[in-house]
Length: 146
Image (cartoon, rainbow, N blue to C red; front, side):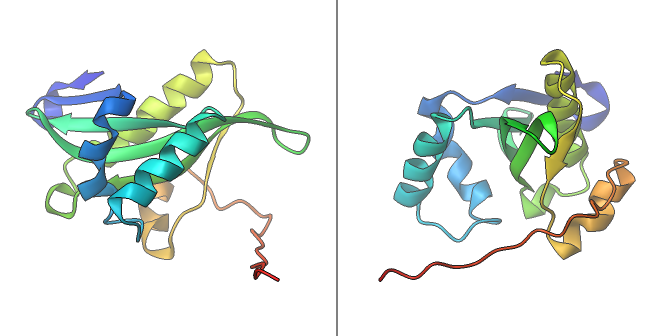
């Protein structure tokens, strides 16, 4: 996908050999070292997780991690696990282009929705893309090693 309004913005899936290039951007969202990031991405890829990059004039400026999910409650849908645009290029349209890519991918897979967990400071960005706050709260219980 190319958007000429965004100064040669290209959105495409990253091959596993390119994942390390995504680390400097991902680290702005996730507190992981590079080895742990790559280990987790490889592990998640066994369940369909993919990394998608936003390139502006050939430079990686945004990264999205997404995966197909099928649940009884939600049916077939795409889940965006990670979406981050390099702080220096936020507002460039890269985030919007990544969500557009995810939505097109979900439609191509005949999925009915895209779900994601948003940080509080990112909610307004997603609302501008017509995402709505899901009424079911997300719950967590940390399990400590015994």
